[in-house]
Image 1 (cartoon, helix red, strand yellow):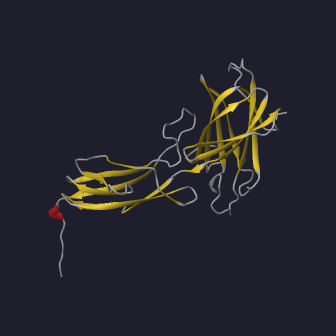
Image 2 (cartoon, helix red, strand yellow):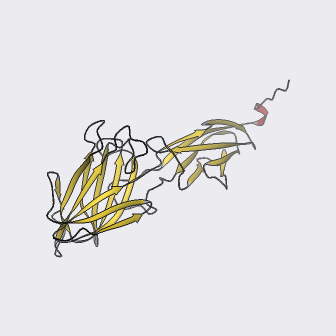
Image 3 (cartoon, one colour):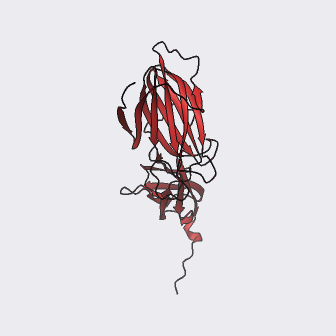
Length: 267
């Protein structure tokens, strides 16, 4: 039996610890790889242990407290082929603290990619609230144990003011705030702003802080200005995965009126 070497894979602010645990694999929750995958170089197993933080845990290390399920997807890289996927549920509505495990068996030896998405739902559906991606080397005849730390993502945003009325040629500053699934404030990697009708209003991002912007009235009418936050912690290049990450968005309703309709009363 081999010793227990380990390697820490740092990627996109997320850390995955991979340890070679020797021969054999599996547990009661084991998943066989897709039988259509060629494995002439032999096969091994990937064992995952997911710890759901207790509901009263403050600033958990591995997953947000709001996590109720974790989806894991494994692909071979050359060629890029789905090995399998699994959905691990929180053991009880308010349970947590102990690790819940699953094993992918008969994984072709070589480099595989691992996508991990955390969800508030119990079915691995909906908005991804934390994400992890890394690559691991599967060794024929051995089990690789993978423990993951997934960074929380920006999933909620608020805008102030949410609705505004300005005159033609006038402008108003607006602000956004962003949070993770546990309502902790977060700073997105970047915020993209857009107006769905520049003929009514335009938007200019604050050059020193892209959570702020200035909206300027151009023509009479109503439009929406949106701010879309990149999901901090997500991959810079989207991985090919059956699960997707949707950026958080804030919408401002902007009404531009004729300046003659605005009456200023000075007492």
